[in-house]
Image (cartoon, rainbow, N blue to C red):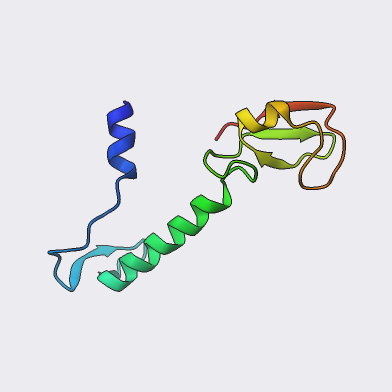
Length: 101
């Protein structure tokens, strides 16, 4: 299982690829050609989205801890355990729970 996850997270290599990637059909049966630039654009967007879910303290793990009472999802499990004040709003943390996705 770990190997499968690792393989999915490896970057898609664009070298030795023709300028057009075979079309893929959308729900309305029209085909859309994916160009290398479109794939690169999707990869950039993916990287940006991955950064948005990173812990705001260590910036290395995904955010998982929801602080109570404010409800902010701001830190990973490791950083969230020692955080007594929410980094987002400054409220005192009275409880925490783990977000799963």
